[in-house]
Image (cartoon, rainbow, N blue to C red):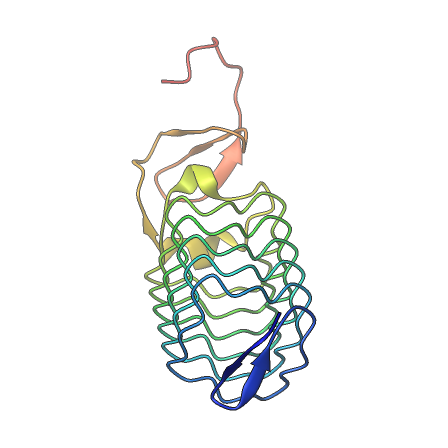
Length: 178
């Protein structure tokens, strides 16, 4: 089943390279494996969209509403996600290398196994416990809005947050991680 949006056929596996989908309403759209390289999805509503394995490399998703979207194993390398709402999104094993996430909302997003190397995260809102063990450079995290306190134990990451907001190795623990 497919739908036409801004003259583009929206369906699983669609090829939408450089498509202009600014402001498109794609709530719950099924775009599994779609190729959206360089697509302009500025302010698009993709709430609950199914984009598993989609290629969104270098796509413009500025201000996009992706709450609850399934982006598992999606290729988001170099994607522009300024002010995007990814709350509760499934980004498990997504490739976000070099993605620009300034002001993005990643609260309660599933980032297990996601690759954030080289991603830019200033003013990004997320729960530190949602971050994968493969964290980007600590200097990039210093600019982010970390919703934890120094000295907090980072469950699933196996480290403590020190005064400079960088990860340090776990010291001998007495089992009390509160």
